[in-house]
Length: 281
Ligand code: LER
Ligand code: MN
Image (cartoon, helix red, strand yellow):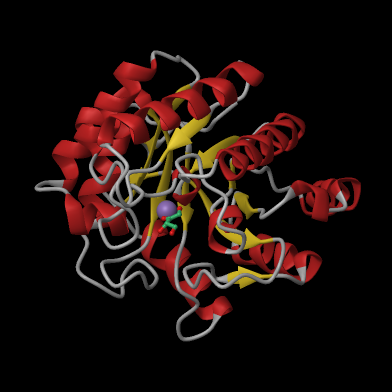
């Protein structure tokens, strides 16, 4: 069972912390650890993390039994699977103008859902949603997106999917929590919720706290990075008030560090733990 978020004995807000590890080399830069999966899992455990989020381009490229056995050895649960590399490395997206690309994007996410079921993780719908195509109407784009999301949400209702509002420089589809909530209403699927990321919220939201409060019980996963996407503590985001609010809305999920490996992966991961564990009410 998830530990209580608030430890009334010493007044520390306790969150389960995880960090993103890419199972393969990838061009996306806000991932502290890439490749060398066994060594990275051992490091993460030693640093005191409670879980590990896996960024997976394609489950077919993984030796799932081997990874599951490494995860068991280090006793790290996997709260979430990131899927953005399917877009970043292969341009697969739910809203591509090409039918074949859209179909392959859906199939890829269905395979991520099967993997997530084995690991008891949520599946992140980040950049794989794509962007508006030139000359394509907003209605058409939304209808492709809704179709893809419904296919994925119906594939296995026991697996949760999370849509992540992402800043305007990466996509024009669902930049804010408000638009994310409107999309969830249109979609009408209970196993789909939101992933909020402090880096994106710092760019797009008038108030980070109000936005978290708006998401409330549709908040299924949470990413942290500071304003510059470095480790928490390296920028100007107030993580104390964010953690206090997460505790108040009874958020029971993981807080996962999706950060640039600056100045190096281990320092960034250690500084994240140091900052976030020092947060008191
Ligand atoms: C993925 O979680 C994310 O935050 C995006 O910035 C990916 O590009
Ligand atoms: Mn993110």
